[in-house]
Figure 1 (cartoon, rainbow, N blue to C red):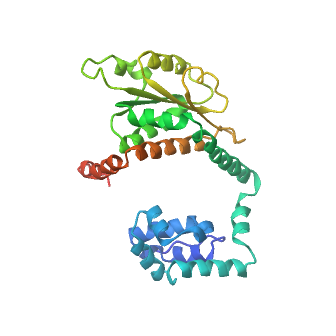
Figure 2: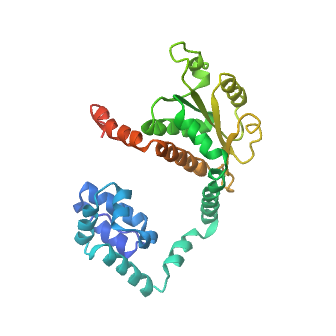
Figure 3: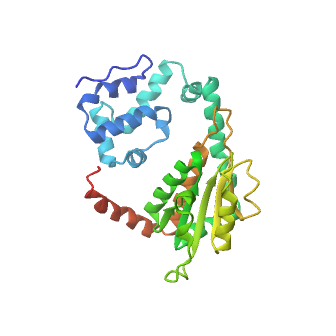
Length: 288
């Protein structure tokens, strides 16, 4: 296999690492790609943080940097700084010049929408909603049309850190999952719904049905939703309009990731045990 040719705009770091591509182990290739993609912010990283973000050990990061010709991470940072000085470009200028133009404007608005999530997680209702999701004996997750994919992904990822999570497809099952169970009559249940304009016609009756069955309901929705707040105190809004051709689902996905993090934080040892116990079960499938 030949080394990958360097694109015309490659930085010295990217050109060096791409030149080593055919001789890298799988772990080294992951580190190299991560360094290339995150070059503008490497000054903020440590060996430990790079290891954590790439899924390798810190010693593997250190050995790779030495193999690439750097005197550790500090040597890499010094080389990057020297290259920027030579080019008369400050690190901040180099980063922000990538954000010029229409696409840059969309990225900035999307980033602003993500940062605005801080207002949602600071709501008094936020910790109570997380308690409802973390403490329920069974959690149902639903979403509709184009948002269904986000809901299904969230249900699977939430299942990694807590048990008894089910994706709910009302059209497929007709809410048969909600038939009262004598065997599990004392268990608590929670519904998490993701909805975004144009709002699904079935969203409101499903929430009302869940409330009628004694479930707590959490709704994650866009900034224009007005139907959810009268039904449940646990409504969290996400900005989706960033002047792109379609609404952005990035900030909504970020909020779902924060929910998973918070739920895992309610019982971290149980969450870690689930993560440890999962690979041996999956190993028999030979998927990885």
